[in-house]
Image (cartoon, rainbow, N blue to C red; front, side, top):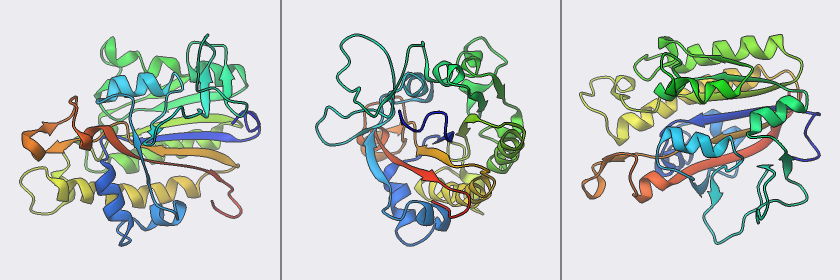
Length: 261
């Protein structure tokens, strides 16, 4: 990333709560055709730095994206300068700022956040912390976890930003996969792995619209912030230390509008 800063747009997308096993199982048979096209090698399993949304994103915005599962150290794409770091290499984009959005702002980027889950709802002081890192941030109930067409609404907002800015760092927290997600599977009365997968299939179609709207070469990251449990070993939800929470799907690449990935 060190060489790319200033020459490309940057897009980070968190598919909030997406489990690695569900992402992989939908990718393999083509349940997510856009993601299968943009990630031809398939999802990479990684370890998230935290087990719930707020903590994971605080780490992401400090440069600590999900790490490869194998033993490290693993050099990072983005980092903040601090003494003793063992994961900064010659290709790492390093900023002498308190967070990555601030570093990209200094580098000439307009920084924009499109929230999804409750930690991006600026109605409370806590909900203003993460969006407050950006030049502009938006959230409304149409982006939230209970709206059945949240991803379409978020993509519409993202496309508006992309059309208005010449150099942008765009962060989008997609909320659709987070519970409740039973409305994505007709007839489902409760949330389950099946409704989780159905939500991902819905998101896939909307991501195709977003990537089609990228106007300039874009360094992108697709990742989950954490997984969640649906009764495995007696656990339900997240903010707990279960493999289905800690193992997340990750992918990155460089999108060129004229030729795709």
